[in-house]
Image (cartoon, rainbow, N blue to C red):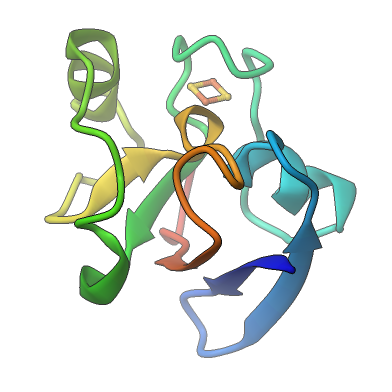
Amino acid sequence: MITATFNNYIGGAELVKMEQGVSIMKAAILNGVGNIVGECGGQAMCATCHVIVRPEHREQLPPLSEDEDEMLDCAATARAEGSRLGCQLKAGEHFSTIEVDLPETQ
Ligand code: FES
């Protein structure tokens, strides 16, 4: 079973089951997790799917692409170590379990 845990900025957490190939952004929206917008539909053009991946899950992920890196500079909440675009991280392809923190604003 592939899962993602979303920690919101006020201390709550939600565990979501994910299908193979679904992005963190899409899983959050499909499961009603708050504070992820996904305005561009996953094209790495809006940064409204900003997540901060917990340290223990970062090494398994692919490196930032140039587009993702540039877009994170435009995120509403300043990027941090572990910041990624949730639309670029796919279940099964990049992780089998992951935990992310959600920024206060998108
Ligand atoms: S949904 Fe727009 S950058 Fe991820």
